[in-house]
Amino acid sequence: MSKISAADFVKAFQEAHPDAVKSMESTSPKRADLVVEYDDFIDAAESLRDDFGFTMPVSGGAVDYPDDDRIQMIYYLMHPEARFMLTYRVDLDRGDPRLPSLTQVWEAMSFHEREANEMFGIEFEGHPNMIPLLLPPDWKGGHPLLKDFKGEGQQ
Amino acid sequence: MKEPMIEPDVMRISWGPQHPMSGQTRILLDVDGEKVHRIIADLGFTHRGIEKILENRSFFSGIIPVDRMAMVDTANMSIGYVTAIEKAADMEVPERAKWIRTLICEMSRINSHLYAFGLQAESTGYFPAVFLWTTVDREVLLDLFEELTGARWSFNHFFPGGVHHDFPDGFADKVLKGVKYLRDRFKDYWDAMVENPLFENRCDGVAILKPSDALRLGATGPTLRGSGIDIDMRRDEPYNVYDELEWQVITEDACDVMARTKVRFHEIGQALDIMEQVALKIPEGPVKGRVNAFMRVPEGECISRVEAGRGELGFHLFTDGTGNPYRVKINSPTLRNMYVFERLAELNEVYIADIPVIINSIDPWYLDSDR
Image 1 (spheres, rainbow over the protein chains, first blue to last red):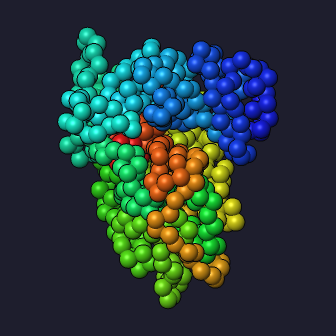
Image 2: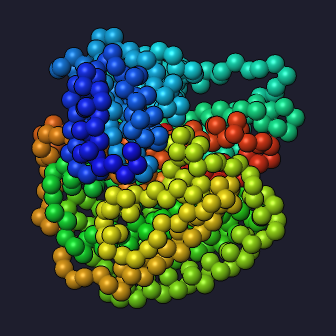
Image 3: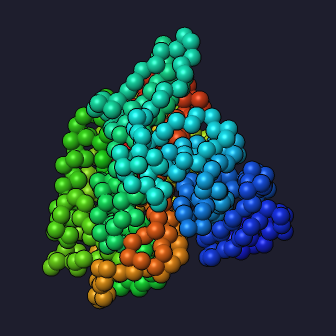
């Protein structure tokens, strides 16, 4: 699986995990997007690392969609040989956003999950060190990157 | 930050944020005698909420806070945001503007690496003179910035669809003169610093980061290339006119502090080559198209990845058809490298006197990790 192209990867992954894929596409030779089913989140991630060669974690973040009542958690992964980027996404329930921590697959997602926790209120189950990363320890203003955030002291 | 539990028989030292070498962060060190068992980085002292600020600003005025994410490396910060907007709005950029952008980005990279160099020299404790040299030599670049853009720092020169000003009269010659001067100076740096036995003693074999660890921990920029992995966004996802110029991706195989310093050193050489090529080959033409400061971007999303001085900088831009971004996710290089720094004490024998040398070898800039 060394020099696989993004389009071939999309095909191969869909064949390998037909049930796990909610939607998947490659918009350009350097990008692939994968939305995964919630229940297969960890298994699919392990397969990406072990079978498809996504050994390099880049970053992680979330987007809030209050109209659809969901938060989408996005992990950015890179294929170090084929040099394309995969956004690995999973939709969460906005009322109670929780997710098994991906640090068990890519250790370096630790900082990014800590950030998503304080900015969006997502609970990461099994994270080894869940403490605020950027916000002050006495912060009481809620989760700043949610769309209904008004500012500290106004909630 | 709520501090994690301390192990028995270990002393915890808090280093920074007031320490002159630490920058705007606090590093907690669990030490047993001289040996460091664990490093904990406490980030967030300069968190300004740039991602939230961008949601409430138009695409044009959003460039201003993005520029301030790294003062020594402003051009490489704003180029990421600007290219993301251009991709999302499917805009054309005039050819000459792309060449001017390349020139400014490379000058900014030299500016950033010079600062890193000075701090690296300072942190070993032997070479305060080199820090003064780099600061003085940076003036050459700052004068060029001032003449071209009107400001020495945070010049906001780029906008979606072009750059603000064309070259003034005789500017290309001044660039060539500056390149020649800096090339001569770098011979001095190499002799005074890199080949100096005192510097080698402090840097050779310190904080080794094996290639497999560098990938696994998500290192980026000179930290990654110092471990022998040639990932560089300028070549892998070309933007500006990097694919039309002759230059190389620099890697070093030693994987230690010295390797990262040498990568920066050679990257300055490559950046000078690029500056020279731009000054000699830049095509004629307009530098900006029709500008709409209240532009709207169709609904969608796009990712831009650029190579800033400290590594890969990514912008994930979500748009909803209005004049503001819906959400901007900034993938900062320093945040990734800080995680590598935290793990280095577990991968190596790290001593407390090496901490300033190691942290400057990953060249952190906390304004971009905190955003």
